[in-house]
Length: 398
Image 1: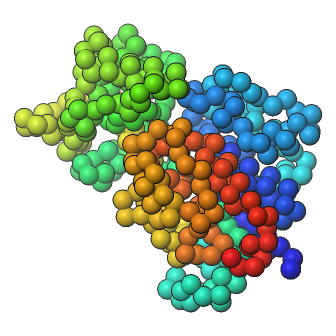
Image 2: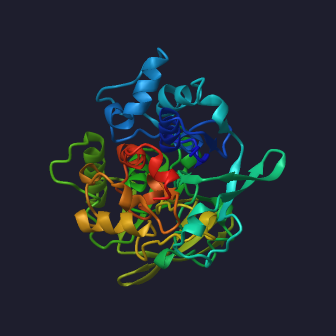
Image 3: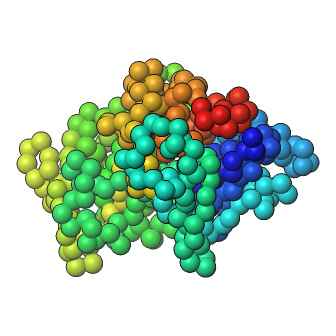
């Protein structure tokens, strides 16, 4: 039986690695990338340095294909920035002669459906499994469609930041002020850009990175709002990643009062925002009542989640807590809980990656939903698990 074409959504690290796996298996594939080049989401945080070294960020497939093309392959304990990851890894992979013609840039997959079937029809049947997928595409020339027998959603999460309001929904006034709220980790190389008072919301690693940089700027007053009344800052005993360990130390120091121009507000929630002339007035709920802050800048770094609307017409079972595919989420939570060390994640198996929609898989950071323990190494292991038996299992409708 001739292999069905594979549609890979996203030309980031995991999407490109999956495309190489298709090449190795002799399977036709098309990579759809909304950006103008590979690694578009990574480029958006190109100034940020990863906690993990090159040796954890290069898959065996990528290493093998680049070596075969006589292209230098980065290795060692140095931790690259996002820009270095693109320049030294993702860009060269996307330009490999066998892969380059398979990538369609500036082409966003807006929706995926099962051809001829609605979401509720033919539940778990061979008829549904045999029907091709229909992809709605937004292209430079307008809307178009494509078909595929296997779809790998590797679209990531960075383009979909969470709201900053209480309970994870937008705070009153947040949507009206959206153009004045920064929701991705910015560069802080221009101190004058951050003059005045900055409200930072969030306590994850992106927020901690922003806090460390903002606290060091000479013309910035930092007001850091953290929801947890007693944050542990994600501290891991005997942390093997020096960059992550040092970031926890800096957050602990700021919370203890080490920043002369920094106040860390723990146990608070953002109640509302409204314009205050050229500034923004923010109302915070604290354990002892409410208080207002008038700030010049609002930086919301409250995490990211993937876009589930892309596959809303498919039969995908999501975890009610994490938003990740149920099988994988259950395995991760059972193994080590929601606050585990990313280095200790169990390697995924094919059954954990399956969804009720046959031949549709969510890979990469998006597959972890709200869990923040994903590593590139994990995504490469997902691709390994998917192609471990070759391509026969897809042809057989397994």
